[in-house]
Each structure stands twice: as C-alpha cells, then as structure tokens.
Image 1 (cartoon, one colour):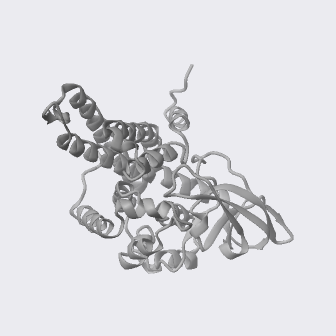
Image 2 (image 1 turned 180 degrees about the vertical axis):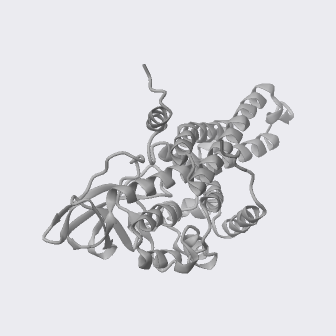
Image 3 (image 1 turned 90 degrees about the vertical axis):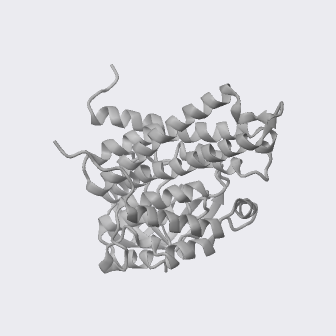
Length: 360
C-alpha cells in the first residue's frame, strides 16, 4: 500500500501563489481583460512575458539543464489556479503544459529550451476538445511536406511553433509562419481557438505522435482541474462579498437563509474540487495512478466550475448580466472548459474502464 499523498500546499507553493497573484493583480484587472476580448489581440503578450520570462514560469516543468525550473505538476497547478482566478488571457496551459509535455516525451531538448526561456510559444495542433486516449486527426505527409487542416487549436494564433501529428505516426515541429492560422469564434474569448491549414509546410520529425499526444493531453486534463478550481473560487468569493454588501429590506441579502444554503453547498463542492485537483496534480508528479486521478478530477471539476459561475451570475442580479461586470468571462471560461480535454461524461466512462466498474 502506498502512503497517503500530502495534498496540502507547501511553503514554496504558497510563496509561488502569492507572487503570481500579486503580478496578476497589477497587470490583469477585469476591465483590461474585457477590453482585450473586444480587440483584435485577445492574448496579453506583455503579461505572458512577465509570467514566462520575468518569473520563469514557462519552464516550470522543464529540467534545469534545459534552462527550466525543474519543478513539478504541483507547482504548475498552483499557477493555473491563479490564472483561473484572473481568467488571464495567456497561453500558459497550452504552451507551458501541453506543448512542453509533448516535447518532453519526444526528447526535443532544443525546443524545450526555447519554450522554457520564453523565446518561443508552442501549441499542440490537436483540438481543444480532445480527451486523453481519444483519437485525433493527423495531416498528410507527402514528399516530405505536410498537408491538411486541423481545427479547434487553442492559442494557435500566438504560437511560434506548432506540434503537428502526421499520418505516418510522427509528431512534427512546424514554424507557425509556414501555416495559415485562421481565428474562429470561441465562447471563451480569453482562450481563442483557430483552424491551422498546412499546404506543403516543412516540418521536423520529433518522435512518435501517439505517446506524446497522450502524455500532453493527460497532463492538460489533470491540471485543467486546477484552473477550473480558480474559476470556482473566484465565483464563490465574489458572490459572498457582493451578497454581504447588497441590502434588501434594510438587511444584507447574504443573511437570507435560502441564499446561505446555496452558498454553503457551493463551498462544499469547491472544497471537494480542490481535493480532486490537488490529487491529480500530485499523481501527475509521482506517476502513481495518474490516469485514475486525472479522470476523477475532470469528472468532477467541470460541473462544479459551471455551477459556481452560474450561481455567481444569478446572485449578482441585474449587474451580473452587464458586459462591464466580469462574471460573464468566468461563466464562458467554465462552459468552454467543460468540453476541453474531454467532457465530464467521457472521463467518467474512462474511469469506469480504469477501475473495472463498467455500466451493465
């Protein structure tokens, strides 16, 4: 029997949280994020440079000998919690986690160094909706050139290098300048998706696509739960604060028993989500029962994050329905993440297979 994992935050993780939260408080306020979603440049490149270059967070999962931090998924999870709380429009999950994990599997040291040092942004050219273990489209390899179209690629518009699966079973590094990236309308305006079209693009074969994509998507699904935790925590905290301030019949709305019950239920669900997300991050770190922990986290995370954001919207009343209030950013993020890297239902089915408890 393995020892029970310690899911509490270490002093180093708490210090990392404080540093990231402080930076986001200074550079990622809600009015700024809303304004950016209305522009032609939804990604906050300046914030990304501060996080990735200034704080070195892009290389958390990269070994120190490759200019990374040599940290673990637990630290990356803390960063994603804070990014979720701020709905930060930066490609951290897609580049510092997904692309990095794929490159680690392939042993592409030079590209890992570029991503870790924030001189390049990477994106895995697999649809954002793809679950770990699911099939994924591949482009054609003809005469040493890549041809085809891939849809639903998150943060492709800001990527410098695309990691593209081909029909020969390989994963290829393609310079973004050799691809046509067409932005598509997305529900979550803070995480844009695009269609990537390759018409005779040259690429460098890094390794086998199947294990690299599986490793990347498993880490993405597991750590996405921490981002969803950040969304849920923001929704709960801001709703409690607002209900303490808003009055009706000369008393705070938060004092009404029916609302107390709704908030208490939401608090219990959020605490449980924290446990599931932390367990997934710890399992990814140790490699012990990682598939099970990730499936459990994602089977639970999406419904809680969506419900927290929906409750925040409803309990904020009329002001919550305005464009100027940021609650709509969190609801859209939660809804979009409910299908990112596999739906809750898909993860429940995967979990049933893993623990041999299939439906009759």
